[in-house]
Length: 498
Image 1 (tube, rainbow, N blue to C red):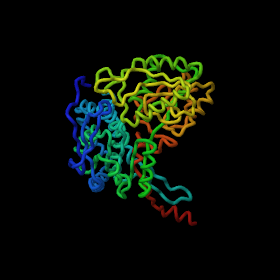
Image 2: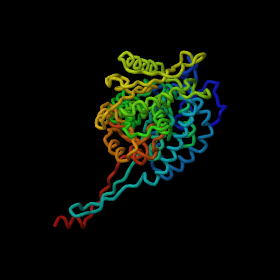
Image 3: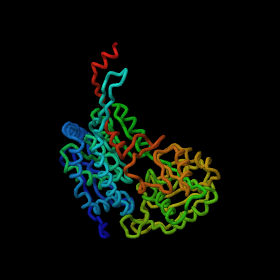
Image 4: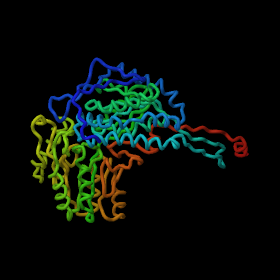
């Protein structure tokens, strides 16, 4: 990664519809969350007609794209990715400025997209693999079960890791034979639009489109009768709105929503520097703004002081600052609204008498007034406090002691969400026993967090963390439907009649 990349000129992005870039009269002004009053760039603001045009373009491209074999689609997709890394440094600099996270994380954001794209292409041989149900006594039919693409799909990604998250769904949708419209986050659309357009330019017109704009003008991406599926990553509230809108046309949805992930540290947990570094990153990466970050730490009472001291030492070295500045380890929160919410739940914990410890120094100068917060740990809070019950999505973590394994499991599962969880123990049997009892879609052992995700494995949540799965062949199947073709065996039918 280059050490000299910076962006001084404002970035401008358009729409990309039916193989052509399109500019709009209105634009979205994208603010820098670290520098009050600074505009990073301007994104095209699509009108409802632009959105309708994108849907029409994707619909027109679907017959030819879906008629290709999976291997043929994979070949074109592989070619479309060539050169994607050439502008990664510039993309990362732009994403860091519009998102707020440190540049290294923004760089990894794009890299993960490339990795996920290539992993999806490795599934090409499985995409069309069906099965045959043979004639058996009493059933005089040979039935072939196969898979078919759905049609036009919409992929909606959030601000925090927009490019990487796009890689968990978009290549699988295209490989399955669908055409797609990508909707980047309205508060951080610039880098994502750049990446998608560079790929779309190398695919047949209409196969891949990207539209940006105000959510109010984007309703057709969800409710149109021509949209076969919506894949949405975002908040629980956003997921509920998407589901309600999609219900009007019975459009299918995959929802990957927020989480209130529990990390359970048993009495034999390994708390050396390696493991403490892992849990620190799992909590505070992207300033705590990752759906699968650890949000609640349950630790055996005998190990409480070790965990608190270990995290405190690392927080004491945190450098809060601008994402592009060398040495910064923690950038601002993305929005003033989120900063206000996290500040509020920290103050609520203080007012309730919890042991709240804050770390680091807020930056000044041209960063004063940015969306920066001092990271905090909240030790042994009342479990009814919002810092425990709600997804913080910021740099604060409750650390809660327990005395028995059953108590820890019950507390970990006593929440609205079920995205991820983790078990920290030196014993494999204990890890499997406790991990199998956590009600969530993905469980780590002695690790946690987005950077440790197996990108080949199906991923998704339970309860209000959503439903459906991304990644792996399950992620491809999510963009397909099954078709059964039955052939009557006349001899078997005659034998059955007698």
